[in-house]
Figure 1: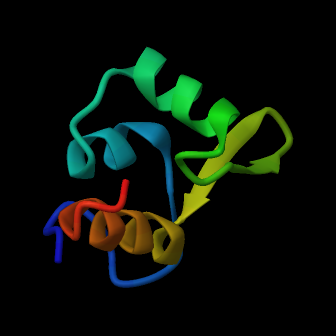
Figure 2: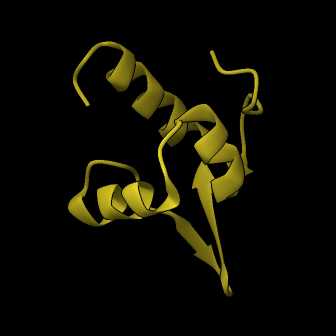
Length: 65
């Protein structure tokens, strides 16, 4: 479990990148390719569901990502 993520809710990209240490460019390429979860859009802002990020972390730690 990552200490940088809240237990539930939504996070912005800087928090995501603290939990999953890749560059912004790599992250967005992964989103486009379907490797990483897509954001939820609210106006001009983008958020990621904490549950989706935690699932991704679990997959990556198991070597599936």
